[in-house]
Length: 125
Image (cartoon, rainbow, N blue to C red; front, side, top):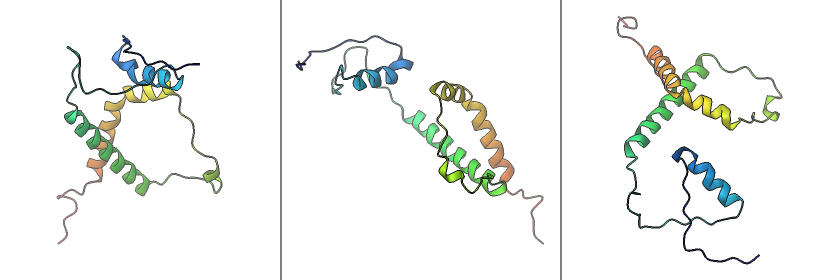
């Protein structure tokens, strides 16, 4: 099969399907995606710095909550559990977990708050 250079391809899809669509097109070998520096009218770059900072803060909070839980109640594993590998997660299951992200972050906040020493109960005399 001959490879021909295309001028451009216009794909119209939902933003939420963007990553999955691009991965499918690249994996199937139909197109090669290249970034360009110029943006067409109406298609500019979105400033994501505040969202990135929130995400990184939530990651740190979640990691701290996991450390607290692991130190207070370590996960019980059998001797041969290291050979079992990890459980494969279905993409639909990830969507359900992601939709409950606010609740998960609230629980992580609560775990970290409960782990902090309080002034009125931990004073040494």
